[in-house]
Amino acid sequence: MQSSRASRDGAANPTINEIRDQIERILSSGEFHAPDRGRRFLEFIVEETLSGRADYLKAYTIAQEVFARDTSFDAQNDPVVRIEAGRIRRALERYYLVAGHADSIVVTIPKGGYVPSFDYAEGACGAAVQAVSTPSPPPERDPTKPAPAPTRSSPARYRRWIWYGIAVSAAIIGIIGFLDAPRLSVTSPRPLSSSAVSSDGTQPRIMVEPFQNVPGKAASVDIAQGLTDEIVGQLTKFKEIVVIAPRTQQELQAAEGPWFALQGSVRLEADKMRLIARLIRHADGAVIWADDYDADLGERNLLEVETDVAQRIATTIAQPYGIAFQPYVSKIAKPDSGDWEAYTCTLSYYAYRAELDPQMHTAVRDCLKEAIRRLPTNSTYWALLSLIYLDEVRFQYQLRAQPSPRPLELAADAAKRAVDLDPQNARALQALMLASFFSNNVDAALRAGAAAYAINPNDTEVAGEYGFRLAMSGKWDTGCELISGAISRNPGPRGYYEVGMALCAYMRGDNQAAELWARMADLKYNPMHHLVLLAILGSSGKLDEARSEQDWLQTNAPVLMENIRKEVALRLRRAVDQERFLDGLRASGIAIPPADGMIGSQ
Image (cartoon, rainbow, N blue to C red):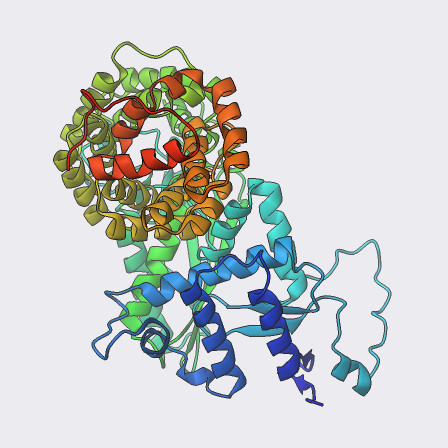
């Protein structure tokens, strides 16, 4: 019998045979959602690790062995290994959530590398371990004291994070995105040089304090300074918040609006670096976010590490749907003076957009109109107003709200105003991209999207929406990669990007993956998502399930069913893609009207 091995902390690890049995159990489960190359990826990294070759598990090696890349492979320009690793992490997390919650062996791929980890689940013990010793019961715990926190690798922590994700997002893919993203949170900043900053005292401020070096080594001093500078540079690419230099306590007391302090420390031991960062809310001193990041400087270039860490922190703090836009963060005492109430419109917008709540739409639209009346030169408010007008076009069957007169024209005008006020505002360019796309000006849309993405690729809302427009205009490969990346990092609109991945799979003929993605999308209220699922089911020949989707659509969105071709053409811009999608609907039994007068081109 294979003997049990001991981990560095003294706990027993699963045997090789137990691990192989667990991998076979995972791969044979219908709840392990991974394509063939993802399965090859998992098998390869597991076998390499079990064979003692974990040190060779680098992106370059995996790209050649699993993805048939040649010797010219460059991980910086070709993220295929990183993307696939993220997918397998999510697939494993889903498997343990749905089917493997009682399994005795937990397999994970820790973030930051490709070497898998194998642990016994909490309370589980392999046969080989039981033959060696019988663990003693845990000591009695004083009920008046808090329970000790599990270690980073503890399966207990692993599973608590999963259920925490359920409570927060109430959707499996929300959990997956949260767990796979760098364990940091989210918001959106703006540089001090922006033309709109001077006119707006309402935006939240983030004061980036110089990162501290621990325990004071010269090398870590340089790293701490470099990280501070890099984080400031990455944060200032966002526009919803303002990044400020360190201030005195008196200056901070006099400042209007909400503000936060970003603090951090760097510890260097040999080639191992650990960064610890936290965000402090000034109003009450609460730590509203904290996390750490580890890197091996013996394996990676220092500048690359600094850039990577800074981008992750900036994305966490500054993208939409994140820290500054969470309800618990906004519970701050308002200043006696100032006009920062306009900032609550931004908070309300992202709260509305995260759920696409029809009841909030009109109130948020009116709030943004009032914010612009008070602060007419704020580019971001104009951009958000454009986006909420546009929702009346693209989500009309879900919102069921009283639309504005000529909402598409209003959206386009607001987007142009936003870009005129600040041409470097990625959110403004995102709004212009969407308004142009739905106005059937695809070339202008993609130009705006490319400009937005170039300004701030760390903004997952920009990257995801740009990916959507690329895919829907026929550039499926490039667009789908961007959508996939947005899902891996973005805790934003529930089920929104998943339907994009469903279309990506459908267009490449993978109906099984398409259906899985579609069922992870927002199917509770969104009729367009039901329409995508209906096309997939029709194409797969699942007519009984297709009839159920038809019934739902006829009951909840009868007008959509009367305008199917028009709505499809509004989104899929190539006639060949429209017909491919409509073929699935026809196969489900839907009668499609002729194409006379419909928009779209080859």
